[in-house]
Length: 151
Image 1 (spheres, helix red, strand yellow):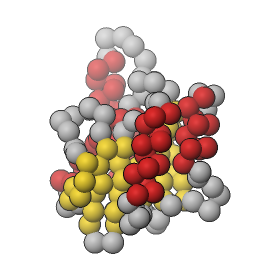
Image 2 (cartoon, one colour; image 1 turned 120 degrees about the vertical axis):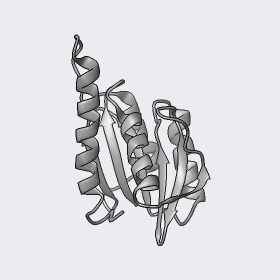
Image 3 (cartoon, one colour; image 1 turned 135 degrees about the horizontal axis):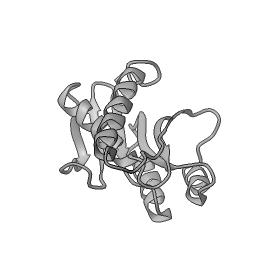
Image 4 (spheres, one colour; image 1 turned 135 degrees about the vertical axis):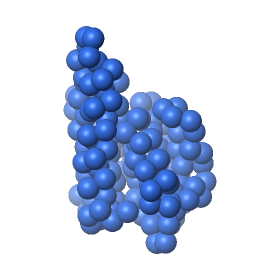
């Protein structure tokens, strides 16, 4: 399995980053939604995108055991899934360990994790969050050009 994970603590932009990547794949790379839904910005969602031989399962939320189990069920039931894009909690959070256990990810899987951090508060916070998410998406757009993703 090929996994692109956005990792971080609560409120670091994991779901927003997954949404922005999904939006990019749909609008710029012409992926189509095969199942699930792609909502208005920044609501938790899951969907399957497809183009040619690539079938990508996106799920923006994994904060609860139930959500990780739903991700595993979807991954296992859709046998043509080639890639998973999802969120994972930061090191030291108990949900991080549960994520690995439930999904049974092993050393033969291709895993790339984008670490996300908190943006400090203050009067420039909104501007800095916008900058942070745009720059993160720029890095991810370059990553997904390369193997094993090649979106």
